[in-house]
Amino acid sequence: MSSELRQEYLTILAEYLLNPTEDSLYQASKLSTDLVRKGFGPDEIIEIHLQSIEECLKQTTPLKYTGLLLQSINFLLEIMIAYGLAHREHLEKKNLEVKEISQNLEIIKRENLKLGQRTTELKVIAEVSRILMEEQMEITETMTRVSKLVSSLFPNYAIGFIIPESQTILNLLNDRVNIINYDSENVKTNLEYKNLTIFKKIEGNNFLYKSMLHRECTSAIWLPIVDNDEVIWVMVFESQELIPFSENTVRFLEVLHDLLITFYKRTSLVSQLAKQATIDELTGLFNYRYLDYILDLEIKRALRFSHPLSVTIIDFDNFKIFNDTYGHLVGDMGLKNIANTMRSNLRASDILCRYGGDEFVIISPETTLEQAYGSAERLRAIIEKDNQLIINKKRLNITVSMGIATMMNEYDNAYRLLKRADKALYQVKQTGRNRVSSYALS
Image (cartoon, rainbow, N blue to C red):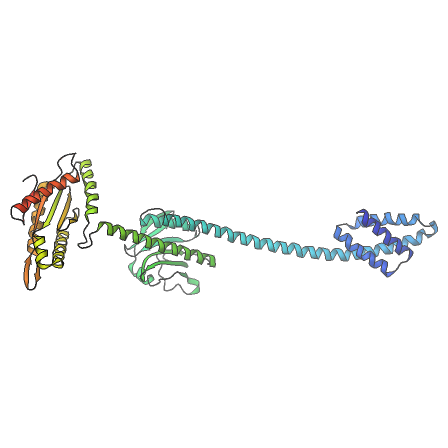
């Protein structure tokens, strides 16, 4: 016990022994509360009591010892009773504090778990965003990467992407994406859901949903990517367990949806720009830009594998006179007709491009000069037979001239190949048009 409390105990005890009043006992009760608050136990109180009574007895005659001792016992009893009450109150207060601390710790623990989950979600969103916005990958690879990342937040779910355009379902299974059967009836039914939808069978809203990844699923998340009221892709989650959904989960899914729709629009825009950069607007064929790129690529491939490669230049006969006489709109119709006829009658391996103005080029991989000549003659005859325009009740015949060249040696290039084909075409124009000629035979 501190010296201050010892002195206070001695003072109150001395006053009580001289004049045992209620006020002295009240002071003793207050002292008991201080003793409890300071953390002193009963043994320490008895010890200080004995020390204090000893001091008091020194100041009086031996004849009064017995009376003072008895009186001091009453004082000690009052002290101990007050101490006991104060101690119980103190313990109850401490128990409440401990309980409150325990409750606060539990709240902090739950908040830490939520914070940890939120942190994980943010990390996943950041990585998904990086993949969708920065990396250039094929759609399948992109969806695979996204599925793997998101699976860390949905460990009890099968995750997949539904792609209606290609009638495929990519299903993430054992960290690998597999293509599974496309049930058109199920997909047709589910494609009616065009907003983020969470299905829970136990709540009765899962009956119209047709499972895609599991035969039976208790919980499902339908996350569609919609453009012009058409479902382009769907990210689907299915589980055989009933898993609760928090507001944070829904918020995460909404952010994921926004990232996917942004990715789709960006991908569509890039594809559209790429198409515009390589497709001729009038005929829908590849343009000169693409011709320049693909011909160089095909020449390198032909040289690498020692395969033949032929090129045919096609010219619309008398196109300037045709335009000047009947107008550019009619001329454009003639170009479209020629383009459509050639597209319908060429091999899948042939590459058809608009060379510019009224000229076209056919790149024929693995094709000899004789084979290219035969195909060109057949195509010329089809164009002559099938391409006629009726303008003001007048029948206009459309014909073409063709010049062919083939790869000659390892030093050949696109410029030389096209130049030889153009020379062959020039020879046709000089000798009557509506014919086919090859450089080697000229």
